[in-house]
Length: 474
Image 1 (cartoon, rainbow, N blue to C red):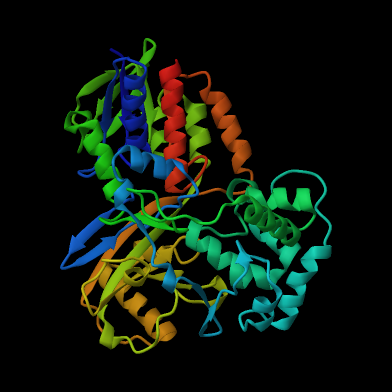
Image 2 (cartoon, rainbow, N blue to C red):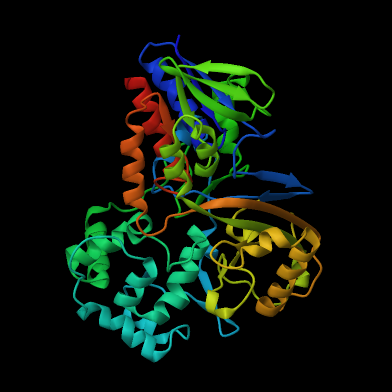
């Protein structure tokens, strides 16, 4: 019976294990799957904690159902009825600009305007900025291929004001990155495709909307056992329900916590792994589901070139700070799901989500749970330099300045993720192609996770399943 050892029990490692076990069973084959997790818990950055009637998410609070791999995995694990839609009667995104919260105009699709009047009436963008965005229709497509920064692309097509007030805060909330360094092709390839195919982002978006409206049937009720789908989805018990279901499917014998791997070396056609405890294990196949910088340390002893390629992926540090308040202490109306803060505002938080408004059953009655984001593309030094008390005070000062909120929180939970987010900088896809070409000579070794081909949960699950399929087909 071949043994596959997966290093790292985040969602990528867990999904790879589930797919290996299910795929082998479907083929009538036997396979031993063992996950080694260095920490005392599984799930990686997916953390759902309950305390005093609150459900606090330490990492991602949702997944995108349009990336169907998460939905399929959840349903295969019996979580179909546990999927939770967001409370879309409250949905909306606000941008902090010049000390005020402005609604993101309706019709703005991934920072591209598709409706005239909402933009015309918005106070977020100045009239010169609106006219510059409208000129996008007449700007010719860039000749030649090749990557460019997201900031360069947005400024070239839609203008600097669109970059600073819409694009930068939107991508900072997703990728925690600086748009001036982000790879367009690795993060928003659709933009490059629209420019080349339609000659204009606006024309391309409008054509796509018309095509979808013609081909999409009228919205039906949710299938039995499945929740209605919204743009963002979670689980009734929090995002932690997904890694927990993966672990239950795999079984307790397949996962070893507190089992950090310190080195890997080739042995025959497989590998020998040494744990921090001194124990040695052998594997026919190995999947590294650890961040690229950790994987680099593991392979450096036998493949310096692979390690060098892995260390070229840069990382930023981020933190989430969840705070609970009595509803009566918040006098300003809280509209939408939260707000984003452009870098140009000079503030120390990037965004805030009204967690108990966005999702049901996240806070007791007459209480409100907020979640703020620090670090990433700017002020990431706050994640490592401030202790919990100072970081909390910093966030409270920002909430008072933006929302007029001066109350003391009833609960504070801080989750720090040092070197927690990979940065897909310009040229990322070329580096990934070189990495994969090099790795092709080692079919018994697979790399999965957010470091490579997508930072979202769905991307990680998809890449993990592809890696598992390569092993099953070998």
